[in-house]
Amino acid sequence: MELFETGIILMSPLLNMLICAVSFVVALMLEVIMLPRILLISKLKRLYDLPNARKHHRSPTLRLTGVTFFPILILSFLPLVGMQALLLNDSDFAYSSAFIFQFAFSLSGCLILVLLGIKNDLVRVRYSHKFLLQIMAACLLIASGTYIDNFQGLLGIYALPSFVVYPFNLLLIVYIINAINLINGVDGLTASLSCLAAGALGVLLLIQESYYYAPLAFAIVGMLIPLLFYSTSARRKTFMGDTGSLTLGYTLALLAVHYGSQESTM
Image 1 (cartoon, rainbow, N blue to C red):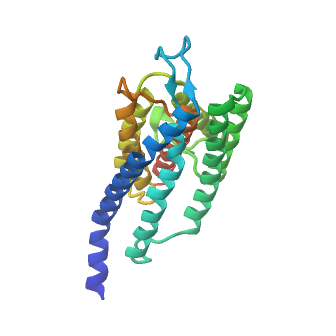
Image 2: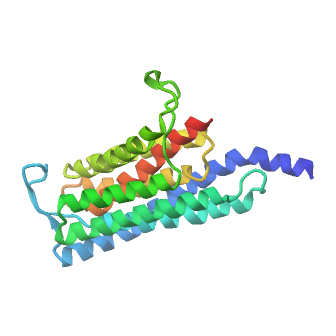
Image 3: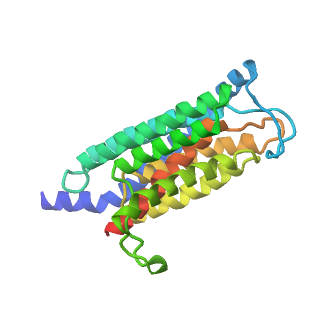
């Protein structure tokens, strides 16, 4: 029995890396299947992103591909995390109330931005309303217990005062969401930078042994690769729209803040 348990523990890092690889492949395949169908619907409904002074493109471009992001991330992340928990023994890796609590709040915040993005892509939303809903989504993420409260000596700062923690994290999350959203008008820039950021976070989370969240990071990478092909193609050019950029920004903020919060407790 002890030998079996030792084997499970030794297998855990390899199994976790395998789960991340499967999450990457599943997300890539789902995007390859769903993307052409979404583009066809966008074309039939004439859902184009029109050029303006802030945007790099010079002709109307299809822009609804971001609606695939939320369902793909859920389908390529949750079933594999469940499998991961079942294959490993309870003492080594098991569901915890903390994870369920964090995920419930985080999922709710992401869903708010998905619905906001869909509405903005279809009928446009005033920026003040967008900003208010972004703050609401950020508050839900913080309420889940995912926040940074210690800089671990960075810039000579260690534990943050309690009255600074929440405003700082709120500003950080909203900043990341808007940073991704505002670069969405340049061909392939949002997808390429998000792909690099998610890949780096995935490796860091694996090193940190945050095995619940690492598969999510690699799912983002797999999901964005087919979109990069379309975004950089002159004949098949498409944008993810606000639905995609808001979903990406929130998910990257979740991963980054989770990584920072775990570092602060190690």
